[in-house]
Image (cartoon, rainbow, N blue to C red; front, side, top):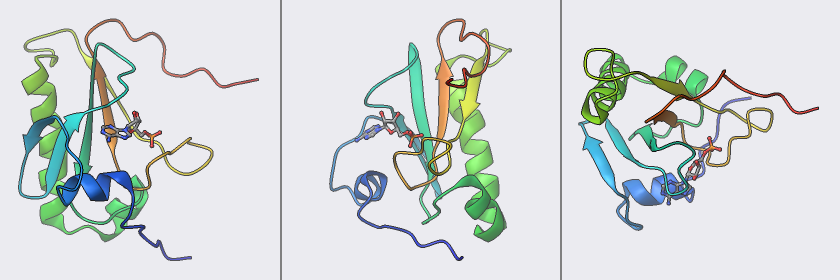
Length: 126
Ligand code: AMP
């Protein structure tokens, strides 16, 4: 089934400037902003400006320019946070998709977690 994009999702509203955000970095095709409910000392979300629901949707349908911009924007956020291994002690990237991934906002976002030891990956319930 083809992806359908809900343009009333909260990140679409952020991109349209309808609700505020704490911008960390903006590029031609990407926006990074602080997560409103941080799960680590540093928690930033990086989103493409295009209407993509999940990572696989983006990987299949985004233009090469969007993919390059987004990939580089994520790296630039890590550098700006000072958490690359050149400047700091690391970070974690994570993206959720659909109900099994517990995706709350149906616009692709990569979480950048950092600012301290993050433990081992994930805990599966049950
Ligand atoms: P996910 O479960 O991967 O879809 O994560 C959605 C994330 O969006 C959560 O970490 C929320 O805290 C975050 N979030 C929701 N609304 C906002 C907002 N207005 N500004 C910044 N982050 C938000």
